[in-house]
Amino acid sequence: MTNTLKTYTHEHGGRVVLLFLLFLLAIYNFVTSGFNSFAIVCVLPLVVLLVYVAFKWPYLVFWSLILFNYILQFFNFNEWLPSGIPLSLYNELFEIALIAIALIDFRKDHHWGRSINLMGFAILLWFLLCALEVFNDTCSLGINVGAWFTGFRLIAFQLVYFLLIFSIYINSPEILTKYLKVWACLALFSVYWTIKQKYIGMNPHELARIHAWGSTHFVNGIIRYWSTFSDAANYGCNAAATSVAFLLIGLTSKFRIDRIFFIVTSFAVLWGMFQSGTRTAMGCFFVGLIVYVFLSKSVKFAVPIIVFGILSFFLLAFTNIGEGNNQIRRMRSALNKNDASANVRDINKATMAKYLKDAPWGIGIAIRSGDVPANNKYVILSNIAPDSEYVYMWIHTGRIGVSVFAISMFLMFAGGCWIVLFRLRNKTLIGIGAGICCAFAAIQFGGYLNQVLFQYPNGLIFYGGLVIVYVLPYLEKDWEIYEQERMAKQEEKKRLKLEKKLASRA
Image (cartoon, rainbow, N blue to C red; front, top):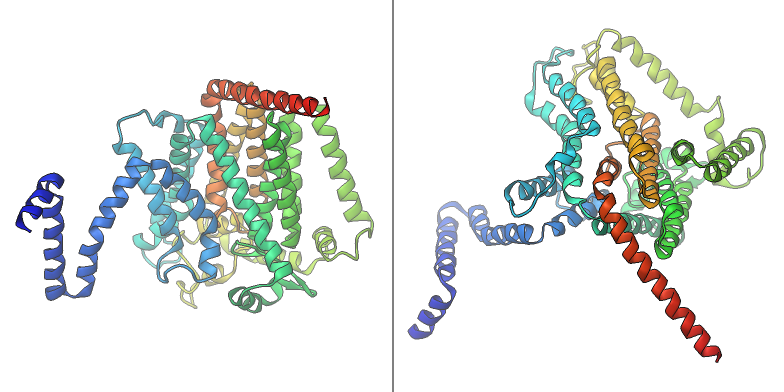
C-alpha cells in the first residue's frame, strides 16, 4: 500500500500533497468556522479548474457570455436562477473574465488598438458625464458613492465592456459568421417560445405574470406575448431590430445556405414582433429600412422599401383594411392621435419638464423610487415611471446628460454608417455592416419610445453589434480569402450535384 502511494505521488508530483492539504484545511475550517468556510475551501479546486479552462479555451467564455446574456431574463422570470444575485453580475463576471484573459495572455496580439475609434470616443464622452454624476446632489440627500456606482455600471461601464470584448474576440471571418448564426439561433428560440406560449400554453410562472401585469399585457382580450424577454415592449423592439438586421444580411450574402437561413430567420422573428403587440416595434422596423435606403446606395433596394413603407403607412393610417385582425388593429392604434396611452405619456413629460427646469443635471443616477422623502421637491420625479430610455436619462442626468447621451449615440452610429458607406468594399461585409447599423437605428428609435436600450439582451447585442461594424475593415482582407474558399466549395457542391443528376438520367 505504501509503495503504491509512493509510486502515485512520484508520477503525479505535488498534486497529491496539495489536495491532501486542502482536505485538511477544509476539515479545520468546518470545525472552527462552520459550513460556509468549509464550502469555500471545497470550491477552490473548482475555481482553479475554471480559470484553467478559461485560459485554455477563451472562446468558451465568450460564447457562454452571448448565451447567458440572451436567456438571463428567461431564466430569471421562470425562477431558474439563485435568488439574491443581481442579474447584471452574471454578465459582468464573463465580461471581466474575458478582458482579464486578454490582458494576461501575451501569447497573441489581442488587437486592443481596434477599440480606439469614434465609437470609443463617444463612449468615453458618456462615461465621463456619468462619472461627474457622482457629485450630483440635486435632491439634497448627500453623495452616495455605492448607489451611484450601481447605476454607473449598468449604463456606462457596460458600454466599455462591449467595446473591448467585441474588438478583441471578433477577430476572424469564421468567428464573425459563427456569431451571426448563434445570434440567429437564439432569435429563433424566442420565436419558438412565442409559438409555445400562444399555441401550446404558458407555464405557471408565465400565467402569474399575465395576472400581475394586468391591462399592460392583456389588451381588449389580446395577449401581448413576451417570449423569453422581460416584457412585450422589450421583445417587440428587439424583434423588429433583429428582423431588419437578418433581412439585410441575408439579401446581401453570397452564400446560398446563409442567405436562406438569415432571410427565414428575419421573417420568423418579424412574425414574433407582431405577436408582442408592441406598437413602437412597427416604427423600429421601418426606421431600420429607411436607414438602409441611404446606406444601400442602390435604387434596386431603395424603391421596393420606399413603396412598401408608403403603402403600409397608407393602409394603416387611411383605411380599415385588416381591422378584424387583433394585431393589425393594435398596430393601427399607434397612429391614433387620441390614443389614451400616448396622452398619458405627454402629460407625464409635461410634468417632468416643470421640475427638471431647476435640475439641469437631473436627480442623480443613484436615485430610485422611495429614496426621496415625501416632502422633497423632486419626489415626483423619483416615483414617476420613465416610459423610455431617453426619458430615464432626462430624469436622472438632466438636459445636460440626455444631450450628451444623444450626441454619443449619434456619433457612434454615424461612425458605423461612414464605415459602411466609404471604407468597406466587399458587398457581403457591406450588407453585414448595413444590417447591424440599421438594427442599431431601430433599437435607438425603440429606446426613444420605450425603456429597452439597456434591457437584457439588447445592450450586448446591438452595442456589441455596432462594435463589429468598426472591426469589419480589419477583417476585409481575410474575408475575401474566406469568401473565395466558401464560394469554391459551394460551386463544387453544385457541380457534383449536377453530375449526379445527369448520371441518374443516363
